[in-house]
Image 1 (cartoon, rainbow, N blue to C red):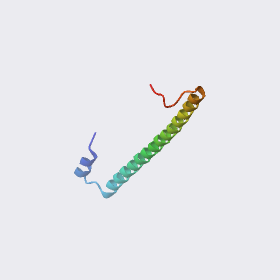
Image 2: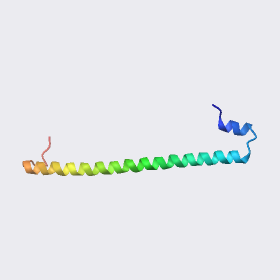
Image 3: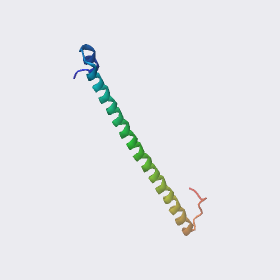
Image 4: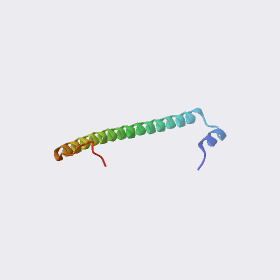
Length: 76
């Protein structure tokens, strides 16, 4: 595999080729940034959902303990 930078330095690449490469790299970086943002948003959404489920679970446990007549302050 050839090194792109070496190829550009050793060849008499015209500006159009360098511009095309620059545009390609910029598009690739933008795609990576967009994908990273999408994944970050998905993770945050899942964390928020999990937090809501944990809150519901804690409430249900507290309700069950109240129904069973167990004092919440009693620990192991």
